[in-house]
Length: 171
Image 1 (cartoon, helix red, strand yellow):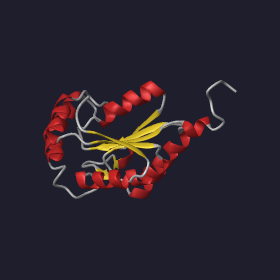
Image 2 (cartoon, helix red, strand yellow):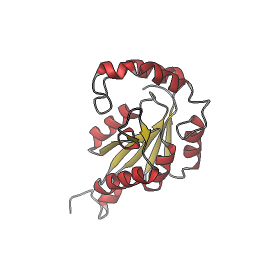
Image 3 (cartoon, helix red, strand yellow):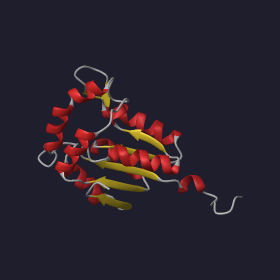
Image 4 (spheres, one colour):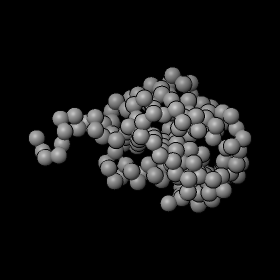
């Protein structure tokens, strides 16, 4: 056996959940951690929605199945998103959580400066057409009471008993 590797090395790999408001830096942090540690990455936006116009959320069971397929096919991973209903499914399997709890103004600035997300939009122009709606959505974070809200995220964070950290500013 190689020096420094435990018998249970697969179980020792990180399984990180990153959550917070839109524009908080979840995807940026997830990409950095995955790149540095060779972990698999799942953006919950890619499996939470049906491809309809206007978009509709998939049923929870369908998303749950997709999440379990991803977790079972990946030894170590980072899963990121703002969906507390989906995150509740994942948390029992996580080795740590990171709550991206930036001020709303920082999230808005990040949204204005985000690069093209080719896995979500056909073009940068299509993404930019959505910017006003996204900024309005970000602005309502502390007022909402839904699965995407600050209230729901604070509840997830406070109830998680494992390793956890909170990011409150851009780094």
